[in-house]
Amino acid sequence: MSREFPDNLPDDVDKEEYFDLVMEKVEEDPLLRDLMNAVHKRFWIENELFDDDLSVALELVQVIMLTSYVNNVELDHYLSTEEGQQILDQVKADFEREEVSDDLKERYHRNAAPVLDEIDEYLEEMRRELFGESYEEIVEIEESDREDKEEILERLRDPILEDPEHEELTDRLSLLRKTRSRVESFPYDDSDLQSETATIDGDEYRIHKHYALQILKPRLYTQLYRFEEEYEDSPLRWLTDLTIPQARALYQKYKQGDFDESFVVDEVERDGYFDEVLEEVAKLPPFREREDLMQEVVENYRDERYASAINLILPQIEFLLWIYGAYLDQQAGESIYLHADYDSFWQFNPREHDDLSLQSVNGGEIENPYIRDLVENTAVQDYLNEAIAEYFVEELYEERNPILHGNVADYHSDLEAAKKLIFFKTITERVTDQLRNDVVEQVYEELPDDFPPDDQ
Image 1 (cartoon, helix red, strand yellow):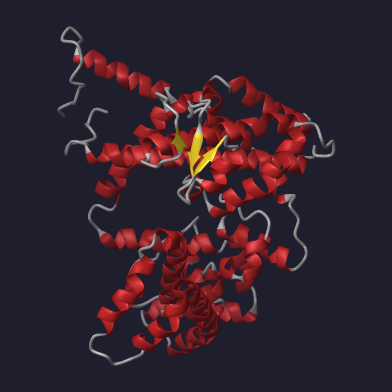
Image 2: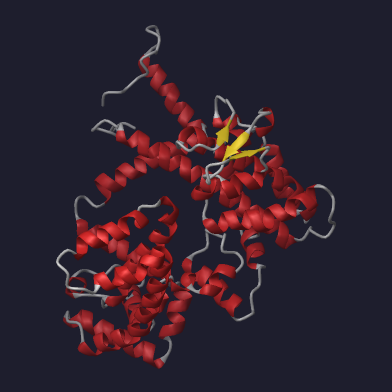
């Protein structure tokens, strides 16, 4: 493989030694190692994993989709009923004779009908919100037989759909339409019946069980609960690491008035959680000199010194958010920090810039900004999950001042400490994921055709 070297590399430097030193640095530096592994992983997925066999890729995607919506406990629970077992037996029979039974098709579409009605209600509600006063006219033209209706619809819809302010709503509409298309279709077809079914965790019928449960309860294989009005008010929406079954179960408890936030305590106290936090933080250069601080946060929590853990982690959250803003400002092409010159986003410190102000999403300038302004009123909000930004602004920031200024004394519980630790880990992962994706995309475009080398 031909190796690319910097143009300004001195002539007296041995290029092979230089390459070895670079690779040694990659192995030593957690962030560089993570980035290099990500590049290799993407190459492997695109060029080797499926070996040009699209059917393998589709099967893998199908397995991931099915198993992500429903966990094994739910699967066994619902299929333990007489009806569930009957459907599973019919699904197995379908695969044995390689033919879909009309009875199962009829049963599925009967069970899917109310789900489709619910989706249609959400679609209409969201389209009314999106198109506003133009909605009735758009619907009338869509249902007409006019020869020029596509041209008229394009003129009416495109300016609204292409408005950046509507991006979130249009994305939700797109997701809902895809969900509708999926629910409309029976879970498996002739090609599935004729293909070898994957064995998962030693269970050769695991996929059959998911098909059976899809027929019995098709709504379980959607995320329609996220479109319910009550969901917007539910706590812990900012926990982006939750699996779909976990998030759905927590929301159901909330709706039933049986919600218990102690879930976050269980998450923090599970084996390996703190190792994950310290490993993720080590990828960020500014936190390597704060290793002792982060270790102290962990030890404080383990020793039940929750006030100390909270007092230490809150400034680290703010520090990380200011750096994230600097990364987006310097590397992602966003205009966030005004009147601030800095060489590296890693070293950004707002206190070093007396005239620092923020570029508001509304076009104005925010002088003497606070961390809340950064999260709530700049482009940073577009890169954070909406629920994450909302939690920081409405809960975490509101707690911050009373705690750090000594105005409250009853904030130190395992629950409050756990929530802030999880939020810190969430933001850390968001920053490293963004950096990884951006760098890998850039690097991957410039890779030589024979990457990776056989000897690496």
